[in-house]
Image 1 (spheres, helix red, strand yellow):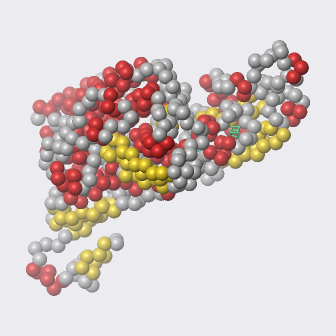
Image 2 (cartoon, rainbow over the protein chains, first blue to last red; image 1 turned 120 degrees about the vertical axis):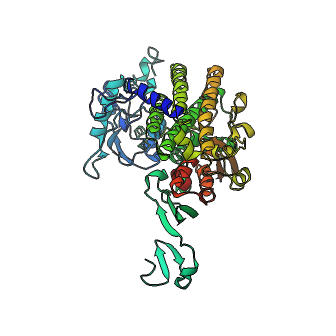
Image 3 (cartoon, rainbow over the protein chains, first blue to last red; image 1 turned 180 degrees about the vertical axis):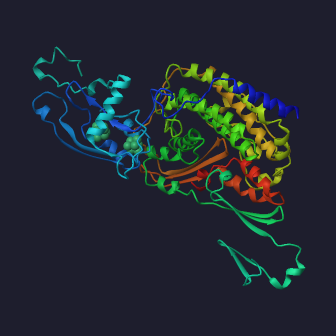
Length: 176
Length: 389
Ligand code: SF4
Ligand code: SF4
């Protein structure tokens, strides 16, 4: 009997504490996600050159355990005009977010910092295939994420700034 | 029902022959009751067929396979780096322990040296995961025994651990954080501070949880002497983990066959005395305290350094086979790995502790009350994802 009453006292003292829960649908009351949170993958955008980071190299597609992505690449016009260092650029990209298991392998294997796990996680849809997202949508998610955490590429070489012609090599030898 | 017609009664796929001529000579007839597959207390999809004589269970038969996802077979068509994300989903309450189980097997086969810092972080995360899993057990076991409140306390504290996981690994449950050869990335600068703060709150909340439920007279009456399994029977059934330790056998792979850096820590193995539901429950509560002490020691010993050993990105272990055992919250988790030298495993066999523990259920349920079956099942702390794989 004593222990029973002791338990009751614990419950009563808990009632006086501040709540530990957040209220989910309300934006101001919910608990924010952590900075490292892995939501759905999204493509990042290079504002300096005005093109996505992704070159369509397909490494992430081959490494995805659920094969939920597909992509096509094309020749980069900006490269021929010497405005960008990316020879090839992504043409179409589709991820079936309904199949994605949020493992983050695609982010790990990408050599161009072109894909990131965004903070996007609420994607309930009424239609069955509404979570097949295409390139503009993925970039929209990515840009939202980039702005939120003030993102910059992890490797400096992935910035798309075009390399100067070889003659002026002495001045910026360590640029790349 | 018996008098309607026929000599054979069909209850789903179990048939019983009832001889109507001898009906007068029999004291009573066993009634067959299906528990599950969607019974709320079965912790997953699990069907239990009970032969009941009045209120006493005379025989029990577990039916498994409802959550079978073919993980083992699926592993054969995935790269080694992809298999880790599948192992996350085998025991979905102790994901990091599962990842460690698989990575340890590949590392043993490839003979990779893991940097110390990686092992310390792995140990801290796995022990935190053990506490989280036991807290969930604490909550739902209280619920199984008829107490509503503990589940709220258990989840409250588990949530704190998961927040730390989220800031370290990026996910609350499916982390995919442990890599073959080390870790995915280093932890942030405030990891030590976060975990220390978490531990101090956990200490008080575990004491609070203990106080709330353990001594409760109603709870004691529901669990003491219920579902007893003796030492020898426990060994015969191949039980492991807290379920075995509840029967008084101090067997813990972290001590008897240490992997990683567990030999550097000083901790005790809590054991029960009689092997009833209460012992199995209390062993887990005590284990949470031991885990806290392990994490404290690990935090004190942890040093700066690299977090990934010398591994190539495409993992190709040499030809051969290996068996490793790790201690997960549910017991002895074994991974048998056969490699044919390619970048995909040839065969992965998982020895799941929940599976062996579940088989002892038939023994424990014999001659117990129907009302106790839920408590006994709850005290085994099974995860169906691991039983069926
Ligand atoms: S996201 Fe990265 S890995 Fe995937 S196609 Fe684009 S550049 Fe290649
Ligand atoms: S997170 Fe995993 S499942 Fe999702 S797209 Fe990337 S690799 Fe595929």
